[in-house]
Length: 159
Image (cartoon, rainbow, N blue to C red; front, side, top):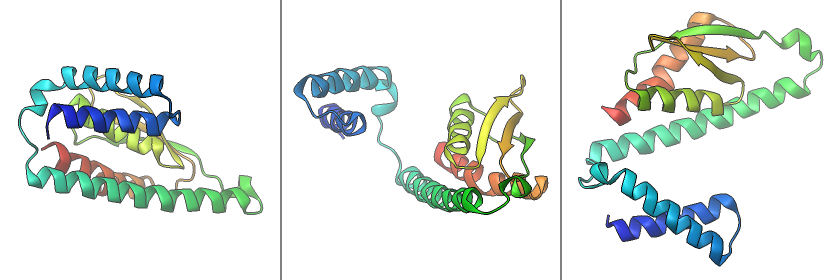
């Protein structure tokens, strides 16, 4: 994809995300897009391998599925009688398999964006991610779910 086409797509994405369809906002989107392309120019010179594009699509699809299922679970929890009796909040230490800062950041943000979970902190050695869960049935089950779900797909995207 050419840099010009990418700048246009990013600018249109900017306008869509901000929700302000004005010429000044579009121009600001173009400036932001040019700045982003400048920062990532060394990565944009080679096309993404097909395998990585497929992994990105699978990650997005998996995250949307998890987002919807989690939202439904949290909504059920919120409208159910005796809310306090159903809550089992807990903080767990999730052992990380991901290694790079980009992988850790993406995983932490995806966990936070999923209703019912929140990334709180990362250990100093970057081996543990501290995650708050609204309801915790089993610590091992949550760790297994995160490792086999989001973390595995993040690894597939980056490696």
